Length: 117
Image (tube, rainbow, N blue to C red):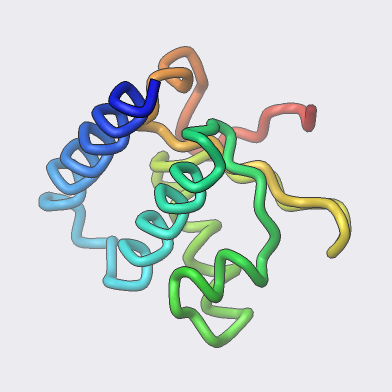
């Protein structure tokens, strides 16, 4: 199981970097945020969707401004790299589906909101 998760995350990183090479909209903050999402997925056992709150994501991605975080995570969603469902309040985590993980192949990426689970 650990090898499967490791291989899946390695594939996700490679696919993400292949895609962003030609995407001029992506900045270092987007990359940091996406890598933080992958890291949290890994530490939570390879889960997709990632369940996390804003504080944990900002700390892991080294983002200090809430406005920057909100803008960049919404852009990753708009550009089709993730599907982002903000938590309804600070006590309930957000759900973030990562495009490049196996169990996301049937999800509609690109500015789509799925119903909360």
